[in-house]
Image (cartoon, rainbow, N blue to C red; front, side, top):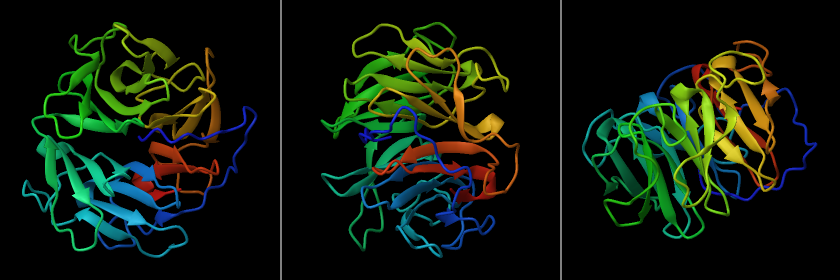
Length: 303
């Protein structure tokens, strides 16, 4: 996730019925369909860019285009050629180079694809990495979660090895460990938030810290407001309020700073395909107007 600065009032509420802005036409590989979407990125003009995992592509939907998206990377079947992707899990836009940066998880790569028309292949930024999530700070440092090594590394664009930022102490539930880190968010202070999937918590690591702080969950898997089973996408607003895609409970949760439990923002009405329901809420983001976007994996749509 790029550190988009979104000012959201502390008492904000969202409509409980979502509007489908991408997909929603069943699973498939047509341009009006998605197949198990995961990571998403919302650009300044409300263009939504989606990691369409099982179609092995990145697809974008422009604001107001309710019928069809446009394939912008991959989509040539699963494979390891530079014109292909294999199960991409996250994507962001690097505005400086007008390019997409993609976690090509199945190939163990982070790749970059130009957004210029006519682009038919990407280039490798980082190889041999079990990446899942991406984030970028305002200095254009790239942060990547590596669930193979249970760590997060920071890279200057172009460097291959990067610097260890969080984790790297083996798999576990200590404050200096992760158990399958998923998505990331980096705030203005370069604090790194990580959804620590199999520890059922979200961790915050202040810049330079040797261990993290549990800022949400950490009470095991379950549906109580203190719990966060298998968290995925995360977002932090300018007040430091954390928003989490609670896929297991088909809802989005909000945790204010220091809170011992979260509140339900949207969803939480059981698994389903209604406008107020999700079937696997996987990632989330906001646009600069404070509208919330959620990838609804098994409904094959973005709400």
